[in-house]
Length: 157
Image 1 (cartoon, rainbow, N blue to C red):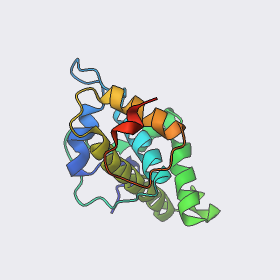
Image 2 (image 1 turned 30 degrees about the horizontal axis):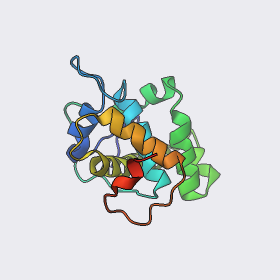
Image 3 (image 1 turned 90 degrees about the vertical axis):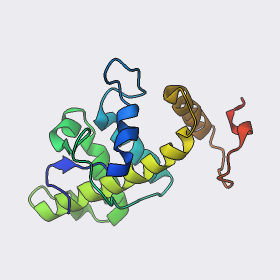
Image 4 (image 1 turned 30 degrees about the vertical axis):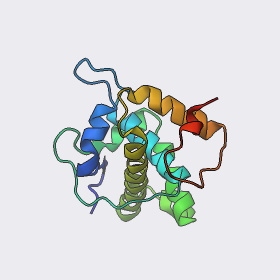
């Protein structure tokens, strides 16, 4: 069950999330864990990949307080994904804790799905930022990815 007021990260994706952020003097693609999770959730939603969390990361990065997402304006993404997934505006209720838990769970599962996609895309890559930029330019080009195998032609302009 989700912790109210926190967004959890799957234990098996914790290292990936850490490696994607700017930590310990390393250059990452994102500034904060929240940035990584929102990017992953939107990627997961775009590809309709919602994956339940099997184990929860307790250490670095542990669950992220919802206030961090709100302060960055990311709470709208959490709410939009919940409305789209449930097709019910009542999911936005601020008075029912159960609905907040459901919103957070939907967001966490899309983030987990997006992190799985990123794991595949970044496998063997040295420069994550460069690979993510290539992924974004490919997505922007609107090419249909019917063949999920590794295709070098997608990196050409």
